[in-house]
Structures are given as C-alpha cells and as structure tokens.
Length: 370
Ligand SMILES: [Zn+2]
Image (cartoon, rainbow, N blue to C red; front, side, top):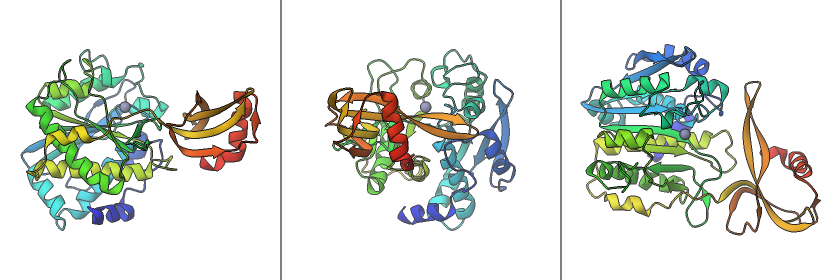
C-alpha cells in the first residue's frame, strides 16, 4: 500500500480539488469515463439535478458506496474519483485491482445530495438531513438511495462523510483525520454477526492507516439512531461502514485527508475480498473514541476581557463566490490544557477586549493559516 500512496500522489484526479465539490465539477469526468465503468442516471434531486451511479467489476460480491449525502462533506467524492482512476489505470497490472475487479461489483453514487452541495449545506433543498430520513423517505434523494440499495443488494456499504476539525483521537488528542463506525442495529448495541464483519473491515482499515497517520484515527459512538441510514442498512443485513474524513494539520482543503480516505476505501474493499484470518473484531474497540478536544486555533494565557484565559477558536465555513471561506469564531474560553489545535499561539503581552478585536487580530496576524 505504500506504493499505492505514491501512486495516489502522482495520479489522483486533479480536476477535483478543494472543499467545494458540486455536480457541475463531476459531470465532465462522468461523461468521459472509461468503458470499464457503467454510468447510469438513477434519479433526480428535489431541484431536478441528476443523480448518477457508476458501476464496475465483474464479481459476485456487491458493494455500494455513496458520498456527499451531506452536501458540504465533499472529501469522499474526491476519494471515489481517485478510486475510479486507480481501477482504470491498474486493472491489469495490480494484484489488488485485479482481485477486487474479479470478485466484486462495486456501485458508487458519487454525489447523493447535489442541491446541498451547490448551496454548501448539510441538508437537501427542503432542509432534510438525508442521514435521518431513511424511515420516512421524505426526500427525493433518500428514495434514490433506497431504490439503489434494493437493486444492488450489497453485502457491504461504505457511507462516507466529513467531520469538523473539533474531533480528536488518541491520547495526545491529535486531529481525527479519519473516524470509523460499525453502526448499531438496536438500542442495546448488540454485536450481531453482521456488525462483527463490519468491525473486522474497520480493523483492517485501521491497521493500515495507523502506519500513515498514527494516533489520528477515531471511533464514533455506536449509540443507536433509529432513523439513521447506516444503522438501518446494517439492521437490514447490509454491513455498513461509516467513514468520516476529518482534519489533517494545515490541510484545510482536505487534500491529504482525501488520500487517506482513498487508501481506507481501497483497503476496506481489499479486506472484504481477501479476508485476513487473524483479524479479531474485538480490536475494533481498541480504536480510541472520537473526542471533541481539537480546535483550529488555541490562544494560550491571553488577556481577554480583563482576565488571563485560554481561548479556543474554530473556523466556520462560508460559501462566497464559489469559494469556501473560513471565518474564525470563539468556540470555548477557559483552561484548555487538555486540548490540542492546528495552531497554538502564545502571546502573553497581547491584551484583547472583545471577540471582534480578537477576530480582527487573528485575521491580520494569522491569515496565512487560513
Ligand atoms: Zn455527514
């Protein structure tokens, strides 16, 4: 896989980059896809935008992957287009690609929520969170996903999201660059046979990724959400792996994270076709829990509003003229000894009176990190 990391650096889909990934950007790529891929229009969004699926592989084992069910969570879409390039370029000369193509049939929905993507919102055009709509299916996009699930009848699903910078992993509270979840099927979080298989796939992904990003992988709480997509798909017998792409130091465009998401996906699929016998599902629980102990900026021991405090800042993402701007905002004030951040500023002489003054100072002094 170290060779594949190098391959990714040189060969990833360079036409997709940054955080703002919309249908118009993927359409030219979909139109030019190699003949090993079958492209289908599988439905329309609430505002009438096309939703596509891309299917490849000749095997018996069906796998379903979807990205950007939350419109502003675009890293997975970049990663699946890198995956298409990997299979297109390596179909005959990579053992990994060859094995996967022979054993699997993979269907990818690369942008399930094109309306949300355009507006850079989590929800769809009718303010529906598609990840809480699997029972009611109020959204057109939810119906498209359910119809595809019924048609593909996957053994495994990969449900790919993005998480905010705030999530940390491990003892040192490093950023959770990737987090995983094997969703529960019931309130008791029963470890069913299906969940064990999902956990094993996650263990295989974690084992590989720890070599690239040690201590930067987290595990989501498996509290049961009765209306969540993953929980219900798992309950229906489709083993569903949740991947959350997160922060990597100074990588605000999530271009490093996209590489790790790509590697995670490839390793996940490979472990399904080539199961390593020694994998024990219990190792899933050794992955540290996701915590909220990471911030974009921490200002240590600064005079603010007459007191000496630590101030934690998170960036808010705002779409403006086709670009995502990162706007600093105070998240937490207090003793932040147990927190970590992308940038820690120690300026004991600085005296700031208000949030506005602080934000302006940050913008002037530290604009380069944004
Ligand atoms: Zn999400």
